Length: 263
Image (cartoon, rainbow, N blue to C red):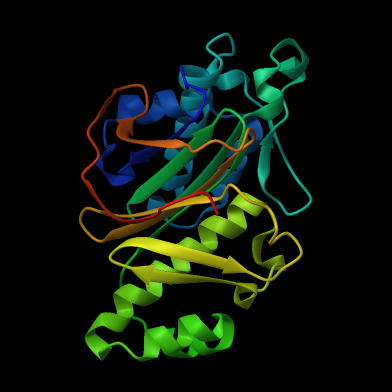
């Protein structure tokens, strides 16, 4: 069971889930709406990613949060920003469901699901790959100190740094639950080896208790986690690899930096 004060992040390499029987089991967990949506994806890889993602969310919620609810019994509804939230009719019978939160991110080949018993949580994962437009994106969207720090780096280091800023920003926006409704230049990160500093100027900037982690995932994944526990305490991060309905294991990762103290 998910412990108080712990943020769990589970990773699945969905392309490694190849057993047809297992994939069929996943489909049986999905709602009819999810099955219809899966078929709307044009590419086989996208359909597999979607099916594994939905099965992963459902099995983790039952396994780690509320075993009394079977994976196929979970229901979800979007909030005003389109983020899916638990909407089970059984929420009244299980008070934990009124406070618990989850967040999902995926990139090519990899899915992340974060879980927290009470608080705000955002996760983001990206594949670090060259894109000609990255400097332009940074100048347009990043805070001026971030853009200055990025362009001051040698060209060979700018690609990694861009994604480090981007994943951290995405994780914070997702934890706030506002998506891109909050401009990316309204908050900024200062990156140092092993640590980071965070500043913000938007309306919710006075909120304290935000914690960040950034890690490299094998082979080319870069992930960031942002969390704020409801009681204001310092969360503990737990990272695990999992194949839904099959088993879990050690996640191959390297922590690059964390926020040293409550922000």
